[in-house]
Length: 161
Figure (cartoon, rainbow, N blue to C red):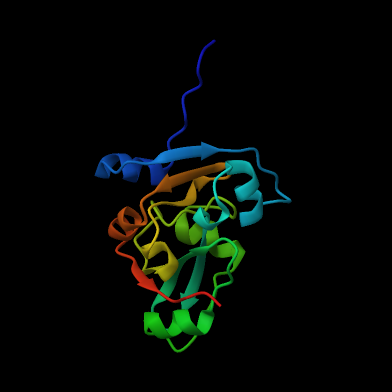
């Protein structure tokens, strides 16, 4: 039986180019279930490993990327404070692909159109591995959070509610 070759996303290309070890997890997805709980179910890793990517806009800095545990909610006031903004709001979904190059449910902090200021939940700092979007719906990448922090120049911060 012929094995199908995995399509490389910008996130995977970036990891390969940097020589960073990772593991891919593919799972079936549906338009109705693009949240973190569907990823936990599909990927079969501990729920606390799953992190979601949220793109926001600051009144001073423009686009800001936040990675928080999948079960958490973003604290926009905390993100505003740590990012040097007075106010931060969620990026409109209609602007997501134009801004990042990614679509809802497949937005990775790696390989966006440009490197935006990125903030990674403090929880990730103490973990050996986390799972984030690999840049395509139904595809997640498991990696060391310190590698993610290094590749995105992320700042570890308390940014969830």
